[in-house]
Image: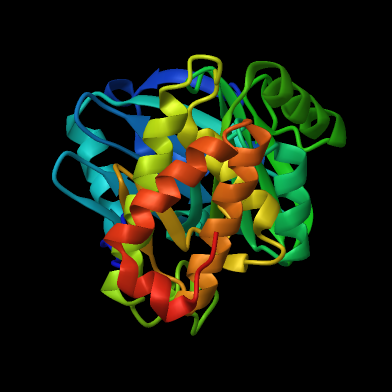
Length: 336
């Protein structure tokens, strides 16, 4: 069964350089600072960063909209976060950065801290940003894709509302947020050239549960079939890793092959997050039956072995595997 961790508030701030930066709260009256920003920018965000805690307050021209606070031992949002940040800023030295945000997008930004991460650590080793954007558009995502390049030194956000791209935020921007198509294309190109890691988050709507937005709990596959498939993948992984001519690591090769098979076996789609193979262990949270699970993984392994010129190795592996798991072989009528 899938397990769910307590969701923490995500501290999301623009990637661009701030419109006003490196102010110290020691010299500031926070209430007057917010009033000034409301008059100067209309809408935006104030980011507070200290040695052990940080937070952000979002505002429009008329009101303070929301806040998020994160400390060593606590994270919370809403009015308590706003009050805490304003009180803490009076007695502590926070470095403060101010970002102007378009009035049409400020409410989107103010709601992002409640988003649920539905896909994480998607690498350019087996997917590309352009394809991910198209997929999220087709799935009517309301949320965002975060792209990290060069260990986070560069990157950006791409924002979606019901599948439509409504803007973005990029690390090479200077001042006001830059949501142009040129910046989006530049982000895609940079990930192609330098590689990257992508995370997809969904903003929950009223009445939508976190479990529904992320991964659905389905019936557990039978322990026998999971154990058999773990043994199969572990044996094949050992065989592939022993081949010096295979330069790409096994998990990347397997994820690529799973993605190719996802049209036929949806649970193999790395974006869906229903099946993971890590440390010789399968974690499965989908609702596919034993037979589909077996067929999908078997087909992926056989195709991959063929592409690597390792079908004879796979035949040896399967012979040993079938003896160990004779019950599953007989139950599903597996033939080689």
